[in-house]
Length: 314
Length: 314
Image (cartoon, rainbow over all chains, first blue to last red; front, side, top):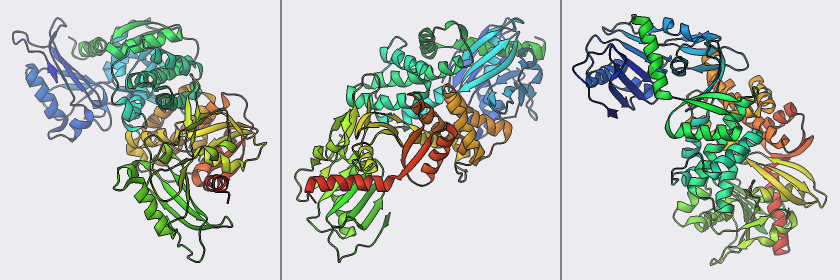
């Protein structure tokens, strides 16, 4: 858990919370929109739903630690609004105008504090059903409600999203299980023993780029490329870091191939941070896609800020 | 563990053992080539290497239970010959004539019994390194050393193999991590909770065939198709069995798309058994591939029998 000390001299206008499956982030926002205090922890939806006091107790504990008042309102997004979360916040169906999101927020009933949870988006397409929760708020922040916001937005993560936007509206989106596959293959497959010893690598690593390139050229060989990582250890003496770079490259390359399978992609907005955003930029480079990066933390906080201003007329 | 009772009136010529990562199968073979006794257990390479007495104790226990004599020789294939197995049996490099396999068997040193372990095959290709252990023996059995054996052979499993044969020689092969991916996604992903409740399905299941078809048409969307299984549960009320059928269909369809990415495939020899072979036949049907099925158990036993005859001039 990380935190910044509350500045007791300022009263927060609201608290913004990004509450995912396995992570919790809270920012206390002052009247001028600045961040007064921040909390980050692993109190995600899954662990919180099973803990004593559940969601309310966890939220109040973080608010108190951040120095929030008893009447500070809270705006939240993410899996906390799923059926198995705190209160189900439903979905807005695509095509979905980003401007509608705040209006569909659900207030948590039966508690004194004013807590609102933003809805997710659903693509009710028989052949390509898809859902998001949390990323719609990042989109809201990344586009700043620009009525002309159009193009392709890539949001890497456990369940990476590629979103097709036109005129501030989400026309459709596709989720790729890239991060989760990387995780389960790293921890539970024939590769896990070696990958546990891997060091850091970045988007310049030759094995990362080679695997991106191979997955882009021959996406049908995806699970063959993954097995060849094991064979490369046995026959070519590939080390743990090279193996990890190859697995990452194969899965990110496969995701890019999927996005490109909808048509030519020359440019995308990349909503990400840190090392993961670096890897995606490198994969985009291999794929010939130019990118403009928006920090994921900033995007979700600005999306929550937009919704807060709309809901409470701040 | 299953076993058949030994017929003490017949003396076995040899014991044939298929010793994989997680399974052990032994057949006592009589002078006329018939099976005298059989043992099946979960004493695979991984558990045996850590057990007291290791590989020798496990083998002797099964031989005694099957009624083998102290001097019955043993021919074995599979991961028992890997570096982390009993004795490393090395690899024959592709292009590899199947007729060479028996000649490269390694005798286990330092024990009284004559135990030989067959080598695997290695494809030392910089871009497509690949290995097999056990499947080369199935190939030996499936082709019965036909000098004209040519075409494509599919061997489904944890690490499915597609082998290009010409004139009794393995020109090249590709491993797809289909079975292992199905296993890790079923047990460790966002799908695991639902899939644990799934019932049986077969290759006629509409969701299986739809997923095969989608993966064949758009292999680049593989990880998107897998995530859409979760979305289908949330938005379309897809049940556990339909979800499991979709995951299986997506992964087998992706494997077929990979095989087809090397060129047109009209026919393949399918070395498999039971429900898994049925699913592959159904996927082949969707992909327009005709198949001739060879039972996997029979194939490995015949491959071991061929090697035994060659080694001991039986």
